[in-house]
Image (cartoon, rainbow, N blue to C red; front, side):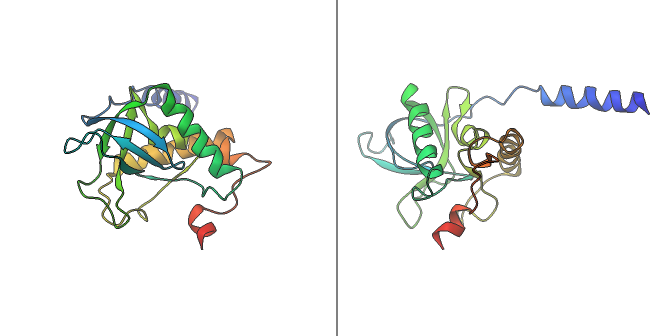
Length: 175
């Protein structure tokens, strides 16, 4: 029995230490400004590099800005992170904008997947299949975001702080 537990621990250690996949190919864009913990304005689309484009980060759901203090904390964290290196890689979920004229996608800052970083630090929630109706999120992406959320929850950071947790999801708050 002890040997089985030891082997299980070794297997978990090995699989937990696997390197993160490298960033996928995408567009190099520049962040213009951060609107919220999940929406940014960027520039650098091939058809008009100077035109501002609104991007909604896929797979996440940030607290509303009126959900004090979590919404503003998510916005500030994203702003601070993107200020370090405002040129990022954008991987779009779809080539067309949604009904609000927003594109949906993932941002990479070097090897850091920004969407996952926001979840792992407890600033936003991982969003399940209930997101953007045409989303093409793969199961591995959802699984990585879900694991990042579990990591934040276990550490009790951000919206998972035991003394001041987020009590309503952003969708519940907006209703």
